[in-house]
Structure formats: structure tokens, C-alpha cells
Image (cartoon, rainbow, N blue to C red):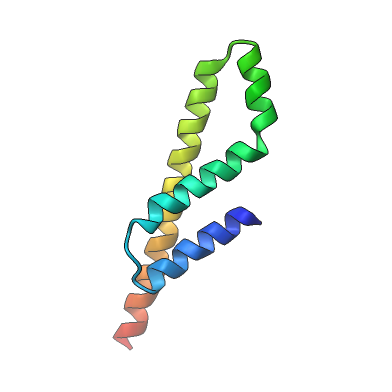
Length: 86
């Protein structure tokens, strides 16, 4: 539910023409939520020496958050553009 709030907030930022730096902030929030949910698994994997896999997973999580945030911001911007055209 918290991830949905982050996505909706960045979509509203796009709709209201907020600065584009809201996209990376939302991406970091989404990655932090993901890390908080899977923290036990990361610690268990670190204990058995899978640090490289953990790093790749965290980088992938940040990139997925960045893509999701950028798409939500873009959708908000498109809605703003369409509402101004009418």
C-alpha cells in the first residue's frame, strides 16, 4: 500500500508540473520500501556469502523504482497536457 502511495504522489507531481527531481526521490522511496520488506532475506543471504547477488538485487530494485516513477510522472504530465488542450 505504501508503494502505491509513492506512485500516486509522483503521478500527482507530474499532473501539477512539479519539478522532475520528484522522480528519483520516489524511486528511492520505492527501493527503501522493498529493502524494508526483504531485510531478513538480505541479512540471511549476506551471512552465507551472497553479497554480489544482494547488490544486483538492490540495483535492480532502484532501477525498477526509477522506471515506475518516471512512467507515473509521465502519465501525470500527459494528463496535464490533455486537460490543457481542451
